[in-house]
Image (tube, rainbow, N blue to C red; front, side, top):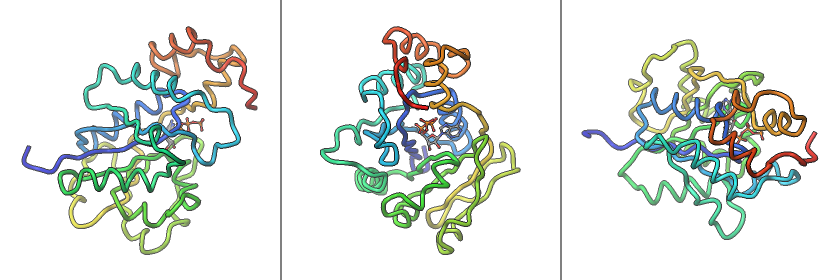
Length: 226
Ligand code: ATP
């Protein structure tokens, strides 16, 4: 390979990992020619502290099942192993210093996370530290007004360009790419609700081994989530 390795980090609770996550991971990897995409499993998303979240081991196991056939999709336990609460900015600092100049780093998030990113710890710092890939999501607007002007100047809006390669935009400095190349209407909330209410077809929302795992370990049956 005569270019730097491209590594993407995809943070989330993954409770459970679903077809939307997998479409995002595969679509973004294809479009940006990512060599490794790491799902970074969150201990507890700071904004979800009030909700019951499935134990990390189950969430990790489902990710392992969902990604087992794809050598480029990997799982990081960095946040699970952190001593205290771990924020996205801490994870980015860790990966950036571990990788140094050996790789270009991308952080992937969906439109809903993007709309909340202003509330994340050290938002401006985390946005300028690595490249970001913001992915459209049905039912969510994807605006840019909440971002400081200096950061907004880094935005490369690829919406409407279909599967056209973004690689010509790579170069000096970190960018914030916005893409609508992936559009899958699945959420973990919908899945937990479908299991709880015994409605909807699980296999339309998660990969087959994940559906089997959810049934086997009777996950999501008694959550008191609305
Ligand atoms: P929940 O319904 O519990 O909030 P979720 O489906 O949003 O869960 P998370 O684990 O919270 O899943 O999401 C991890 C990341 O993946 C976030 O950046 C989120 O925006 C993104 N994401 C999740 N589902 C999709 C989707 N269908 N399309 C695009 N991005 C998505």
